[in-house]
Image (cartoon, rainbow, N blue to C red; front, side):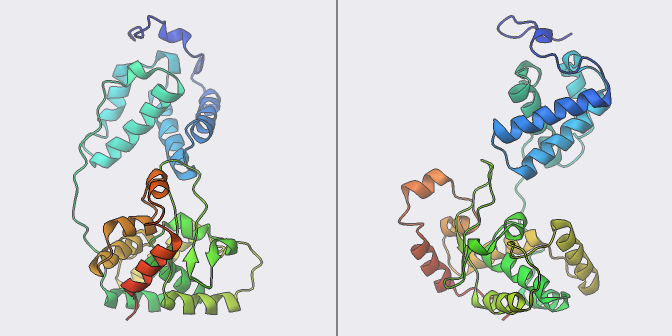
Length: 298
């Protein structure tokens, strides 16, 4: 039986969601939860989508009205993830906490569940320049080659690159200003691409015959498929995320301080950017980027 809340309120009176166990009812609740994540919590689309999928799976597995779900139900559900990677358990627990604590205001059900320690592992499998060049040359077209170099020389996330529009690019300064993050858990500032990327990007744009505001009108699924096919062809596993990690490692090797690498990658809180604008101004960042002399293919 569920305990009463700290205020003495009957848990069953808090929400009326889940008065039956039909899929239709669950779908309605989940959609309201999605709206809550987007509007109230200001989470990004990918984070919201992940929460949605996990909560749908959770509710279908439990299979009872939401107001009847107990702490034991949650514990039994999470048990299946205790033998998996700690990050997997943490993701599912995080979604359940957001659902009950933030959305349903039933935090008493999840307050005793703790997140696991996430071990920090050294990065393995970062490709060297020879492998990068082989993979790059095996890509099928100028579009994919341009994307490859954009991933490798900007440090941006895959979704940020794929959502770039022409107005996000200052071609004269090779400067990129991604404006696609609406969530509060991801940030983006400005970054740059190098001369290698500039040359291939210009060739790609001259031959491009698609009328689209997007710089790269291609889906994430399609680019992932192309990278997977190229991995099979070359035997070298490279993804957009691997190229982002390579960028961080290479910029560090070239002597760029961590705080600036974080700025290029969009990992600096907006509050810090505001307080230290001089240190993170476009002019300062371009000076640091160009001085590093980042090269991918040579």
